[in-house]
Each structure stands twice: as structure tokens, then as C-alpha cells.
Amino acid sequence: MANDRVFAMKFAKVYPLYVQKAERKNRTKEEVDRIICWLTGYSQAELQQQIDQESDLKTFFARAPALHPNRSLIKGVVCGVRVEDVADPLMQKIRYLDKLIDELAKGKAMEKILRQ
Image 1 (tube, rainbow, N blue to C red):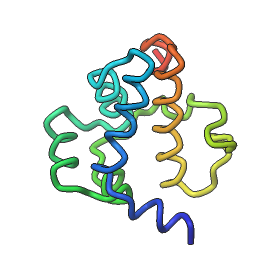
Image 2: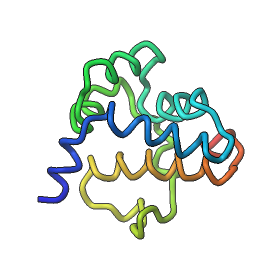
Image 3: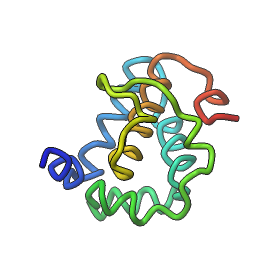
């Protein structure tokens, strides 16, 4: 049931929190956007459209043009949960994004965050 509440959250409400977290650590909104676009396949314009439409997280990921094939290389713990062990595919995508933003805020180089 808790997952349903998370899935129903508006991406437009979560997105500013990602940006704030990054900016508190002297990273930029552009870097946050680059990470989101890398993971989901959205262009910058498509990302903005999802924000403007106030899509929920379930819809945001369902409409993602192409999830990056290297997303399976994202490993580690976020919110006490190992992202590679998350059973629900949608929750795993959300946790992948959380983990990438955490890495950005911790000062990791963009090339490593984007698994290049």
C-alpha cells in the first residue's frame, strides 16, 4: 500500500526536491536534468512537459521513451534499501533515480554517475 502512495506522487513535486538537494551541495539543476534524461530517455523538452503536466511517478516512468541500458550498473543503498534488490520494477526505477541524485549530491563525477 505504501508503494501506491509513492507511485501516485506528482513528479512535479519531487523534482524540485532533487534540484534543491543538488544545489545545497553546489551542483546544478542542469546536472539533475542531465541525470534524469540519461536514465529515462526524455529530451529536455519532454522532461519539462512531464513536469508541466504534473504526471505522477507511475506515469512519468511509464511514458519514459527509453530507460538507459546501463541502469543495471546502478548499485548501492538509498533510504536503507539496496537498489539492485528492489523487487517491484517501478519502485526500482524510482530508487535508481534517487541513488543517482544522491551520488550527484555527494560530489561524484558526472561520468561515473552516468556509468560511462
